[in-house]
Amino acid sequence: MNRLCFVVPWLLMGCGGGKSSESDRATSETQATPYTFPYALNAPADAVTLPKRLREVSGLTYYKDNKLLCIQDEEAAVFVYDIEKKQITQEVGFGGYGDFEGIEYVNGDVYALESDGNLQRFTLDLSSPKSVQVARIPTDLPAKTEVEGLGYDPKTERLLIAVKKGGGTSSSRAVYSFGLRSRAVYREMQLPEETLRSAGVDPDEFKPSALAVHPETGDWYVLSSASHQLIVTNGQKQVLHVEKLDKKQLPQPEGICFAPNGDLFIASEGKGKSGYLLRFGSR
Image (cartoon, rainbow, N blue to C red; front, side):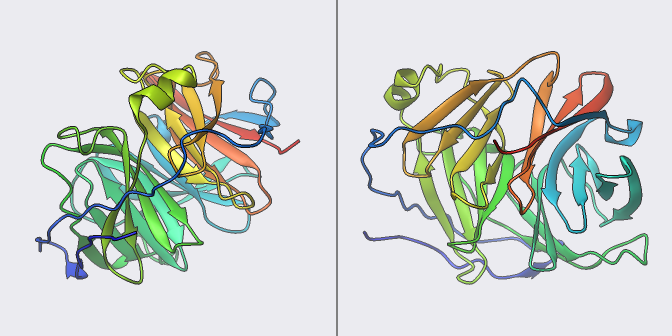
């Protein structure tokens, strides 16, 4: 398949520019084989109330040594959360302002996603209260596009950017990607309305708020906070499974990630109260 892409240079904070490009994966939209969902979302292995500093948690990623990196709205800071101690062990600022909607840790670098689709990349120095070498990466997504989800696909070495609200029909319900090697932006997937309806998902309510790639299967797990659903897709316009989320456990789910062993973590804002973090073991 032909792919139109554009190269995005690494730019220091304050720079901009770039042109967008699209590339859809051509696939069948029907599921060929039965799918077994590997988690019991009604029975979390662990459920904790997050500290007040993470009341508006908007993204999380697995870091290392039983630690997660968390980010929250409108604060340019990374919170290191210890899963075993169940507390924030460190807070590292990366400067600037913005509406941050996702975070990913990849090969020693941290990527923070802004609501307009632009990225910030920096290294994390836990010996200092501030990060170093902050760079801004413009993605030049369609105008007025709002995003709310950042994941990473190790097979393609691309960051995945989920669109919450499209700036037009070309970006609605789409997932874009940024190639860490190519420095190019692609349109990876756009779920058609008929595909969502056939899976029991209302297209008008499907507004991605987070996504993550399963470390073993490579499937994409997409949270929709508006519809309180978790949608599993193979990244090729196929909806493999849909799970309804408990509004009491997860009033506003905004973050999702996996541990290397397959454990699933989902974080939720508290809607004025403390946030929540749930862990689910694979069955």
